[in-house]
Image (cartoon, rainbow, N blue to C red; front, side):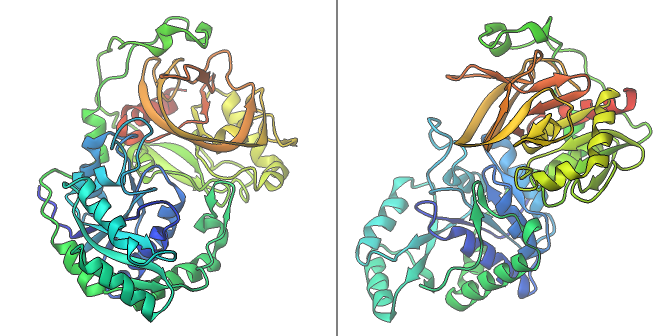
Length: 486
């Protein structure tokens, strides 16, 4: 299979340069002109893809070479871009910034090279004129394999300022594809973990995306940007497919002995490969209902998770913990992903019916997978307000930001992962759970930290760690199989 979808990567020298405004505005502007636009985001970010989806009417998908491995970047891209006229990929941080201490891994530059896609560099020109040439020249020459096809100048002050910038860039030979003037910023409010998600803003988010589209359409050469996207060469790899991924995924490792007794510094928990058990095919039996938390409080989810659950034989039903007073009828398993329960703690606590329904499901031994926000929701309380009480732990807001990629191994055998399963994940929160791990921890962190965290109790797997199941499709298969047998 050859993927020849025209594509661009929108990058910047650093965070705060305006790449989200440009990428989202470009997606919306091209969509308004009748193109089917495939939206993508480099890195683990959940919030920007929500704005991308609003701009294009299509699911925003992440491309993360750390979480999924470089080998899955192209297949996941081809999966998302299937049937589209053009793809726009928003970068993360600065163009060459990636996983700490890992070289180019998970950087926008690496993803651009894997996709053989030209890069458009968004430069905040507010405090420079001729120096912009040195800046752009440095980014162009740093890695010759990264093709920077043009520059969009942001926060330009006047016609004179624009003329000086263009004159300077003439010497570098990189075309200016757009100029955005200094203006009142598009209303995209932020809080402790970044932009406020689309699901919380409703009509205001629609207005913000429309404003971004107007800025980009008015200040950028859309025809030149499309032409640059069409210069991307074909990709020869096949698109990712959830069903095929399940069949071809490696077998789960055999359980470790006495996983709950493993101490935090146990080398047996954190080091070395595990023996492999014989694998089986995906169970094609009766579908089982898996409830997935959604709504404004739980907006963090990778679309591939639901696709894998469905391919494994689940009927995925989304419910809103802020509104629904009980789990969907016939729920056999529960997935509660990330989000902002701390913002909605009062409303979540007031929904006693649903809290009781969740607790009863967990007590029955049914599989429950909870990540970050889901972990907080399952705790005894959050900032003093009662939560589901599934876990004998208390959660609270903190001043400290916990952020970064993690290399983890499953310490305890659970409904989600067999002990010894190795996955890469990401932490991003300003909360603390005490205790941080149960007698049977969920994950052991490899590397300098060498700690355990999270909880495995009955069918519950709860942790701060965000993971991308496409990297280990067997977790979805295992979860659905446990839903059938619990």
